[in-house]
Picture 1 (cartoon, helix red, strand yellow):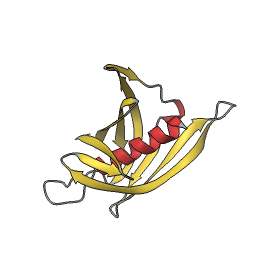
Picture 2: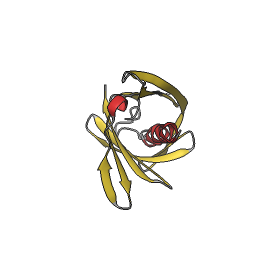
Picture 3: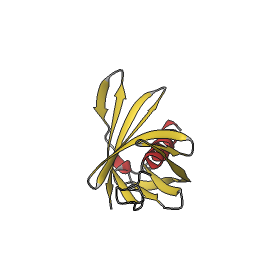
Picture 4: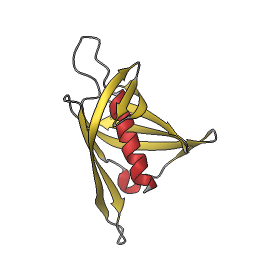
Length: 133
């Protein structure tokens, strides 16, 4: 359950931050198809990289109409990666690198064809790295 909540919050936070407009007035840089490539947890000031396993390469689709979708994968008892949960929601650009995903706020920083989203809650901070497909 904690994983589903964390994944939903991260995706929501990423989507809410990624709505910044390009300097030329084009569409938001967040719009498009992304895959999860890395995750780090920061608890009590200590950063620990997560072994993503089945979560590696989870897809995230952000649409110009303010909606997003993601698929959460997990390992079944036989060790096979299977779809565990589909997440659909709404995102909004709050400005200044902040986004909301279904009311959860995240900070997003773009670096070329990747972005890093930062989400903080009572359990600590999670930084997810996504790469454009």
